[in-house]
Length: 362
Ligand SMILES: Cc1ncc(COP(=O)(O)O)c(C=O)c1O
Image 1 (cartoon, rainbow, N blue to C red):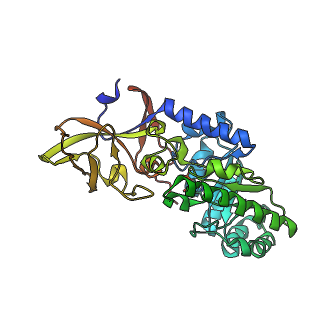
Image 2 (image 1 turned 60 degrees about the horizontal axis):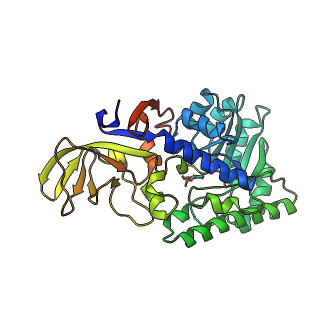
Image 3 (image 1 turned 180 degrees about the vertical axis):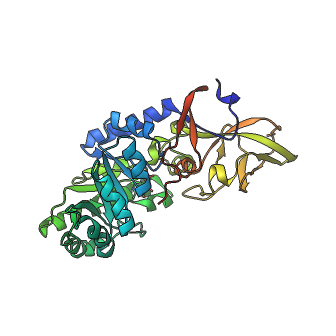
């Protein structure tokens, strides 16, 4: 079957591009001696994670307990939840998982860690945690200055072992030049490696020093002292990565196939993909439209739930029934909106994969 024969909207992943992206990131990690622990929240698909492990990744990262349950059931036995997991309810699920999975979770405070230790300790078990350090994103994480004090208190908690430190330079997505991205990447690695040294100096064991995002992976992995990297988006890439200069359009594995369902005016065409297909996530670093229509200058400038409204550029036209391919702004969110993706090589459809952990946000 040819891609053009698919019903729409369909999310299509080109396996040749995906495999190349997986291989390139594994090679970069190999060159620096850093362990790759890809963030599988991007794809939520065990088949993709198996390709990442086969290329040399050591374990996977996830964000949510429900995602970990899906991947554990699919046979994955080394998982880091790179997220501040909190509460006895989730701790009980983690305890059950820890029977068959080498597990660690993120934390950035004593209250959260203690809510997990309070379940592990009475069961005679310990849960590994990595302390989240804020390297400038200002989302979650302790400041580098307060890391020793917080790590000490967490290490004293019953039922908890501190395995290391981690960070995520999400602010790289707002950088408007490649130089700025590179500077953030260096800072990400240097701040975390320096924090790890201070912790070790204070007598705290720090085995793992874990950085990672797709735009900063290469720069942060090059920093001495970094042991692990957790890029996620690189398997697919998207319009935001192209805008940031992380990759070219030819490195983007995921596109959305859509049909023109209406041409109500010469300067307006409507596609059968809205926010429930493409997500409402903005293009980064500068918001502009809702995905790129490949081979066209016209942009999707408005989305409602089921409609993608294209402002048709002078000299271009669309006809009802025509199919187009869209490079989404943010591939990770698109994954979570679809039960299945179509896998293809070039224009040839090879099959479908279930997005097994889609919707697992708890
Ligand atoms: C904590 C954490 N680690 C790693 C990643 C992976 O980053 P990216 O999607 O840029 O590859 C993310 C992405 O949101 C994250 O939040």
